[in-house]
Length: 148
Image (cartoon, rainbow, N blue to C red; front, side, top):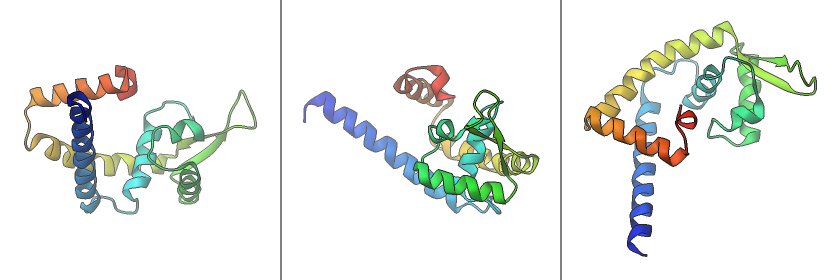
């Protein structure tokens, strides 16, 4: 493998290893209560939009297959954390939004998760390193809007 290709693949492997290691650590924390880490991910993704979200748009923000996401949304609806609503422009489309209970759950778990993320991300690197990491990941995504 040529130098740049090796470097790119080594960087990718490092990124994936850090992600897997951190996610396992986060999943082991006793903060999740009645929601799983994947369910929290869906709740969090829904908080990122002020308007109700189409399932296809939600799918772009979470690491689940479309069928798995549909089943999870069904369970979150049954539990009263997410609700379906009509799309004013197209009655065939269903949009999703958090209920008050879903928003409260996301906030409660999110505060604890943010503390865990902060501890993990600041344990071994400086603020300058974190700024550089953010810059690099935004560049990989192609824009600052996509990274947020």
